[in-house]
Image (tube, rainbow, N blue to C red; front, side):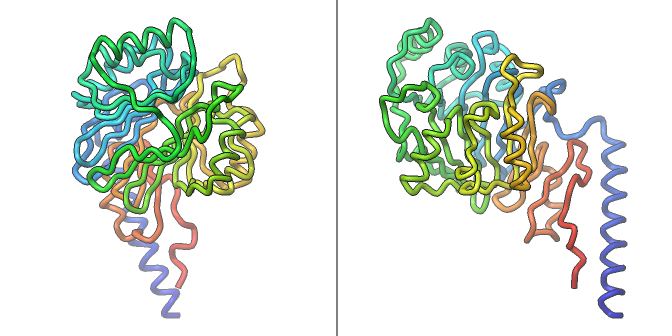
Amino acid sequence: MRCTILKTKRFLLLLILAVLLAAAGCAAPGGPRGTQDTLSPSVPAEGLLKVHFIDVGQADCILAQLPGGENMLVDAGNNDDGEKVVSYLREAGVNKIDFLVGTHPHEDHIGGLDTVINNFEIGKVYLPRVNHNTKTYRDLLAAIKARGLKVTTAAAGVEMFSSAGVDAAMLAPVNTGYEELNDYSAVIKLTYKNVSFLLAGDAEETSEKEMLKAGFDVRADVLKVGHHGSRTSTSPAFLRAVAPRYAVISAGKDNDYGHPHQETLQRLEKANVKVFRTDRDGTLIFSTNGDKIATGDGSSLSQFSFLSTRRIILGKTGFIREWPPNHLNC
């Protein structure tokens, strides 16, 4: 009887909170920014790590804004995406890119990097050591040289930084001499307290096997799925090792490759991973205080401190999208 009363009280309290949140969301001029049509990200609140998966169509572009004010940019879409990425970064309050990564020399990853380099102060630059001779790659190298920047080789074991409680390390490429350019992809693990992101670039099964064989800790709460959700990445063994709660797939709407492939989506579904897609959801922003994860600018994290032992994710308006179904158990 006592447990039933407690359940009822908790249910009523949570119901009231949900109604108040809904009312606040309806009254506000707009929800947390993070869609393709509303590219107006805000500077991260103090103590938050914000990771933006920017919608650049059938390409990749990721911005990580650290709690200490530093910025990391991983890839910048195709050649035609450079100006769009620059505009997004400026709206995000970015003045300097402290860490810039070109995961591998394919155009849909490095195409806009030369434009970014020409428009921002740049700190460290990371590229994998690979022979490549496309105009896109030459343009990137020319921009790096013109700005007097030095390139640090992107490779497994590189400790990128430890700043304001955030650590970034590269888990791949483990080797050299790959047949597939995708397997040169820099794979980055970004960790803030109890929350981790694994950014897999276009790494395919060969690279995934090498990371597992090397004994790297690939576990992460959020997985940026490799190679736009292609069936050649996110192998069952790798997915089991990562064990993500959430996955992000960067792909273009109605793209010619059929990304994401059904095989990949089925693997993720079987593993009970919640999937977000830029082709369907537009630009996605994840905010974390190192304990809980939310979409949007993270302003509603503190409102759910009573769920501190279980992470949640909020909808674009701040409404509760999902929560533990057994939270009222005594």
